[in-house]
Length: 211
Image 1 (cartoon, rainbow, N blue to C red):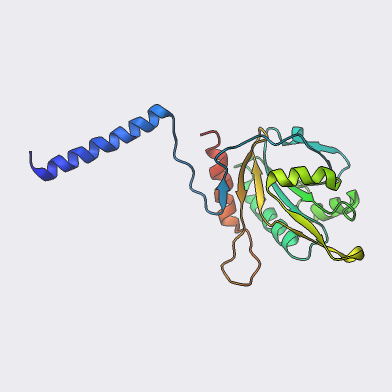
Image 2: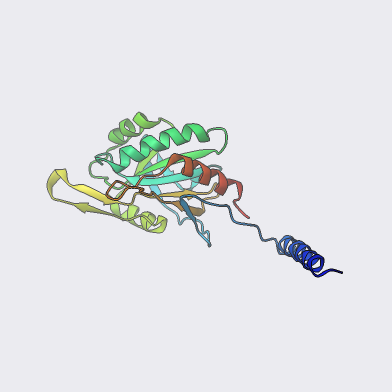
């Protein structure tokens, strides 16, 4: 057998062997992600209790049987929150019928974000979205587990809240699956989630969940 033919034969059989090994071990290729980080160890969220914009309890139970995208912020936010929620409203329309998604806006400003204020605010972007909040003692364990950070800046009633601009995707069984990270192509400009990348990643993560 000629040397070139021998090499080609070996390459073909080695490739088939790798495929067979993957099938035998049950390993699958992770989905290619554009703006997200998929957690290698996916754990269920600890029990939590919040209140939504309609005054109803929002707990782990409300996460079941649907995908959930958490975003942290506050209604007085001057830039990140309205920009991100506007993008999420557009992405949500494109994901309808593809992924059963619940968008959850987690307010970390319970002193000012009353039930009515939350409802008026979230309904402006999409009445299907959920807005929730709680006391800081209830919020902090959840935000920490989701990988969010926030802090109050300034004194008096006009304080601002510094907070994470990322999102977290939760599976229909209440498991933390991935963080969606904003990016900035231009130095000095506000990092933003790009809808094309967000939509791609949500579909990919939902499709490959459990693999």
